[in-house]
Length: 123
Image 1 (cartoon, rainbow, N blue to C red):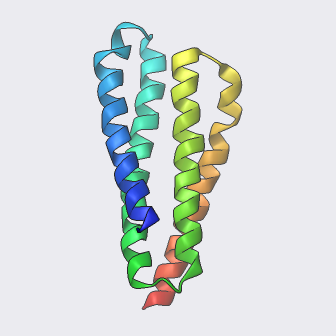
Image 2 (cartoon, helix red, strand yellow):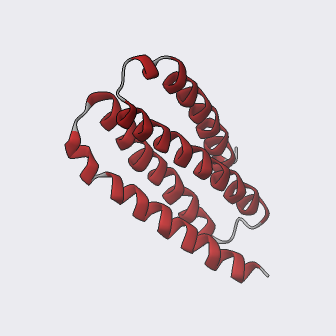
Image 3 (cartoon, one colour):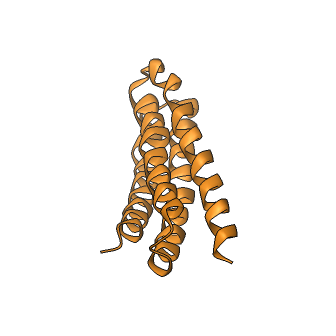
């Protein structure tokens, strides 16, 4: 099994489901600011689900490239930390999680950087 294709598909599915949940259930329960935070988590999850799919495809063709592996795991960690903290923050109002969110953003940035370096080395 290609773990990054699986995780990309899983997170794509989850982002659609969580987006629908936000639009149809949470819109009646959350204030507009909290709902906007939720939707930011959904958007970033979907963008990075697509990145995981790309990493999965590349890693399948170039399994010897460790940068792709690191990039994939950092994309996944970024989704869990960044989007996950935004979901919890918006649903619970627990503001302390706002301090965790940038860690997920840094994971995303490093993952994109590693993907750039890996791509440059591929061809």
